[in-house]
Every structure is written in C-alpha cells, then in structure tokens.
Amino acid sequence: SAVDFFIGKVLERLDELKLTENTIVVFSSDHGEMLGSHGRQGKPYPETEAFNVPFIVKWGDKLKHRVEDLILSVPDIMPTILGLAGLEDKIPNEVQGSNYAEIISNPEFPNPKKPKSALYIDFNSRGIYTGEQTMVVVKKDDETAEIYGYDNVIDPEQLNKIPIEELNNGPKLKADLVRLLKETKDLWYTDKVCASVLDY
Image 1 (cartoon, one colour):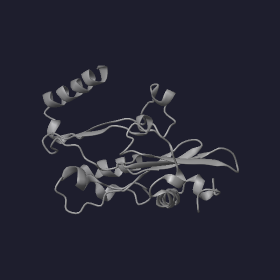
Image 2 (tube, rainbow, N blue to C red; image 1 turned 90 degrees about the horizontal axis):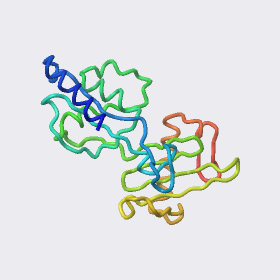
Image 3 (cartoon, one colour; image 1 turned 60 degrees about the vertical axis):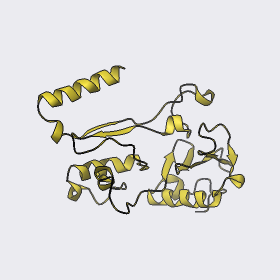
Image 4 (cartoon, one colour; image 1 turned 30 degrees about the vertical axis):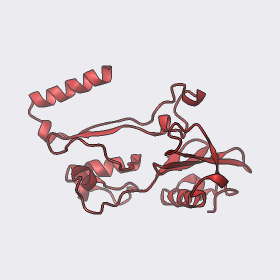
C-alpha cells in the first residue's frame, strides 16, 4: 500500500507539472520473493514467485491498458526504454538485450518477433523459462548436477518437479539453454560448467 501511495504521488505531480504525456513511467523490480512458498524464503530460486518480476509501463495516453505476453528479460529493458523514447540510434552495439518498443507501443504490430524464452541465472544454477515450461540445472559439485523442470500450464503452482527425461521438449530446452548461455557469454558456457548434462 505504501508503494501504491507514493507512486500515486509521483503520477499526481507529473499531472500538476503537465508532464504526464511526455514521461515514460516504468515500475519494476530486480527479483521476486518466495515468502514461504515451497517452504523457502528469499530470492535465489527458479520458481515463479522469485523469478517473475513486474514490468508496468505508463506513458500518458500513448499506451492503452493491456496485459502483454512478451517475455521481457532484464537485458532488454534499457534498449526497449530507449526505443520508446525515440533513441534507438543511441543503443550501444554491444548491448545484449533487444529493443521491443514497437511491440509495447503498438499492440497491432504485424508479425512481432517475440523471444520464446528467458534465461535464468543464479549462483549454482542456470535455467530457461518459456512461459509454458521451466527447466533448471543445479550444480551439485564438479561432477554432478540435478536437472529438472516444471510444466507451468498443468502445474502453475510448480508443485511437481519433473525429471528431465520425462519433461516434454527436454532435449530442446537443454539445447536452447546452451544457446542462451553462449549468446550471453555466461561463465557456465566459457568454463563448460555441468558439461555432464549440457552439450556445449
């Protein structure tokens, strides 16, 4: 309620200053919180409660209220905001994220190229989230790893871990995870971490 109240104060002040139509307001966070779900506290977990974060954009009357199914990752935020502000030519070439401003600003954008997955990175684990599925590789030691997934459609509360051998699209998810680790130059890829279960 405190966050709601003070965000409201910011929006009211923008109205008073007549800046609402010229200001992009973004509400987000860096992580979620388990708050006892799955018997856990804190943030370093691949479950939805800790992995998903809000991303709410308000821009006067330029954006109409809707819920978008775009899987936006943290590296995409800066180029997307620059794109919304008309500064796409200022996005550095070395930025790993993508500019999805067209999708956000135009719900009728034809044939949008939306990402099919997001990369999950934690201290001793890596994973991939597709919306419908989550797959996680947990490093146990130099030789062993646990690899499992969730069917987020059938089991939205993620109560049942599915062994990778039984997970629908398991091999494809593993290949996509390796591709994302390579694209981001993650140390798991460069050091070939968990090579016993991931085909680098």
